[in-house]
Every structure is written in C-alpha cells, then in structure tokens.
Image (cartoon, rainbow, N blue to C red; front, side):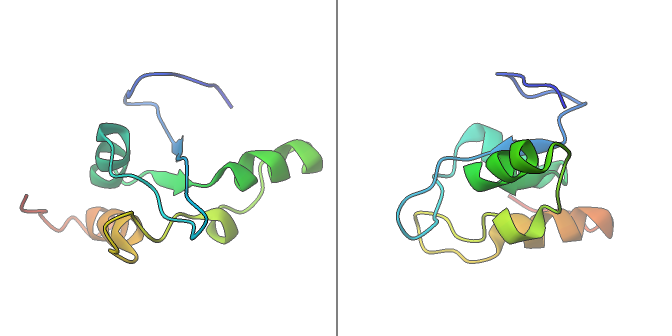
Length: 89
C-alpha cells in the first residue's frame, strides 16, 4: 500500500473524511475515484488494516452517502464503470 496526495492511474483507494452520519464531501478526488472505479473508504478501513497487519475487506468501510444526501453514488459509479457503462456528467 502506498500513500499519495494526488490522483493517479495506480490509485486503488481514496480515504474520505466523513461527518457523523458517514457522509463525505464530493471532492475532485472522490469524483475521480468514482469515475475510475476505485474504492472510496472511511478512515476505519485504514485502522482495520493496521490492526490486522494486512489489507481487509473494503465493503464494511465503503462510503455510501455524500453530504448532499445522495446514497450509494460511489458504489453505483464504480459498478457502472466495471460494466463499461458510459457516465454522462
């Protein structure tokens, strides 16, 4: 696992800050991760990986809400990308 402050082709996960409800802000990194079929996760995933001393399953810590009330946006985006569905912005 490698940390990077920028968006790149080798990015596999984005750790997003979340509020008390688990919602993240729709930043450029979150949008790019969604469009490039990458995981958008809460900090709990990093903590779980450190505790387990290896990467753990992402789904329990996947961000599924944004601060505009949209549910499952990142997951829907990357599933569509996996299915090669065009996203219209």
